Length: 248
Ligand code: ZN
Image (cartoon, rainbow, N blue to C red; front, side, top):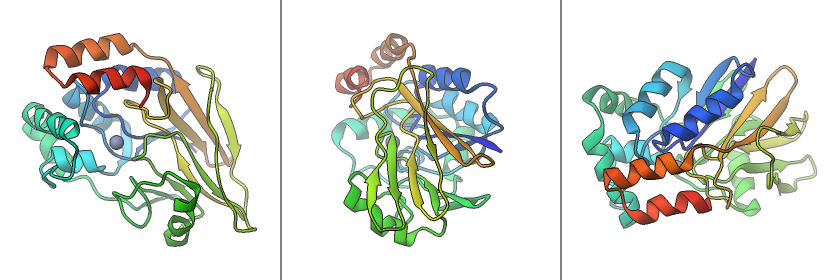
């Protein structure tokens, strides 16, 4: 089975469509690690698309805030502004669907999906020293996570060293392939579809082939100017618009 893993789409329809086009023919099922909405200009179109595409979707912190499950008081002012705008846009049906999304961890065919980490759906796993406690908590040797918007993740080899998986400078459509070895443990971050923060503006995603035990990391250029134009016309804060082109 080949799983297309999407995370942190953040209402960016152009980025999502580009990822789906690039991945076309290379996957059997879509799994989503949360943060479908918040920040970007197309919350309803993105939720509509994922409702049709994904066999499993778990919630992210922005889904919770935009659905009114949390109050966004702990968000910075820009993220809060994006949340309040998104709440006004969501249809009643999409709001209800977001409210019903399950939290991670979610077990799928011998591996695990989380938004932040296996310990806490809102925890950020950024540095190598963040990884061992998360590995200890995981119920599977293979965990997919998002939330940081940083493509890559960590591998914990049998000798007990947690190492980052470097994913810099991938060419468009030419994946970096990582073999999932027996005995090692993996925290895999597919990167963010709609608002990458690893200084690469291009949309990020991953494909996991469970038969071949391979994870492929992809980057995809998309029509950024269209997304930014939509955000300006929606009146979203300018720093949220410009950050997209810097990938941070
Ligand atoms: Zn996010």
